[in-house]
Image (cartoon, rainbow, N blue to C red):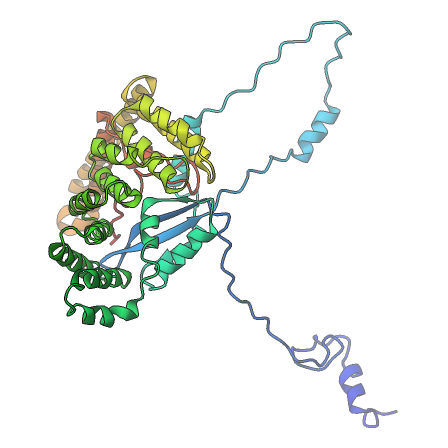
Length: 444
């Protein structure tokens, strides 16, 4: 039967020489049947946050200002036991083993396993973190530039029942039910006699949700002037000032709120946070001590209380509070207490003992090397005439070495650096290393 007499299907399937390339996609052939190609659609699946370790809120640079961001952290993955290489196992099988001791002979003394030094482990972890070799990223991040941010944070907190929640995340959730579309309604209520203060508070809350913190602070101030005994006006003014880093005004406003409504958890906690950020640790301790407890936000307050004591050098008092924190129910308070206990021991050792001498010695060497490097570069720049010809190339290295020298001198003097506090593991908060205390400047 000739090729012309064969059916068309036989020509397409059997007429291909054995040395011909495979059929192209969409072409009929034995390699691919004549079927329609379907593309798989991958839908975005939001990570599960019920097992979250912590919910932490902080302002991060965005454009010419800052924006509130809430990070959700999961606990680190458990370390897998190291597998023994195959050649090592083979060596153990073929190696000569000592003869077995006779029955009744005393056993040779066994040495106990070496104890792990938490301070050494912390130093190694800090070196990896500063070099960028230790990647720690939150599983989810909420951004306040989206109006649904406030409600989303509240939902995440409700799902993560055992998570450690910082004070700012708790304050964010108080704005979850605000509806920005009701701004016009609140403005119309300002004309009603006897309701102006309440209408201003609701209007200010709406301004906070849409990111107009400056306008919100002005509205809250006006409401506090209209009704000086209105606790809500003073409290919202203090919270808006906290979100804007105006800690002195926040402390003053929250003092009025505490006088109008004494004993309120959120008021005392926010006031203690404002005093803490102003480095008024003794006054922060007074307000935080009144609300410290063993669960929820009261456990968070206890952890900040221990940190305020540690910053005052009250080492034993801080250890007592951390001992109570370790016994708190829920969340990973035990891991946080261990981190803070190591930080207390590290802070005490920096001011006295061998750790301080070792630290001063390393910082002296670092300062000497940076000074020699700066002098060497300055001499080279003068010889090569880099200053008149290429001024930025000559000045920038000197600026960097100067900053390194100042950092080393601070370490020699005994002052603690930002990188020398907690941050033992992923997702554990450290109140001294947050951007609330040490803002992150935009990089040019």
